[in-house]
Image 1 (cartoon, rainbow, N blue to C red):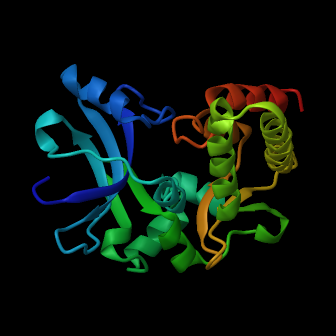
Image 2: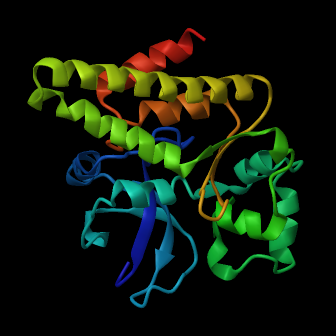
Length: 250
């Protein structure tokens, strides 16, 4: 990995064959590496000049890595879950299976850096799928969440953290405002859950250019996303647990 930058990277334990549990904390990665284990990494890849290279899909160990760094919440939200397998991409775009995408690859529709093959597994990105295949099928029926909502959640997280510094009427006011904010957040995720149960997609988009950031098709994906909000420092563990319980009661 000499002079290569992997960003944003999705990291998994190599024993996680179904790639379900993303390792989202630096401590989790350090723990894995210092136990002498390898980690599976899926990521966009750049050279020293910032040029796009092929998507990276492979195993890394401690000696392969020069440094690891956290990205800001804004960057994290912008690049949210940008890499996926062809079968996953086909499901999200409403295609019959991954063979349609493989044919597009064979015909040279994708740029070299937009796809990567690792053994029998092909991976691509949301931006590449959108460029080659256009809008997601039945997108008009999808429940769309824009990235400003993600920033709203993050502000709510910071507001939660400010309670220790407030007293009296200021504290009471902040608690009331925070509860109203939580109810709005819960309402959005409840609508997202209802959309999935009605067989509609949930699509996260960038408000600035309407580009797709992420697509959810299943309840499992939605709950997994919510479960990891505390690790992204977007919600306190207590609030997250409350939200999960409220959603399970829907």
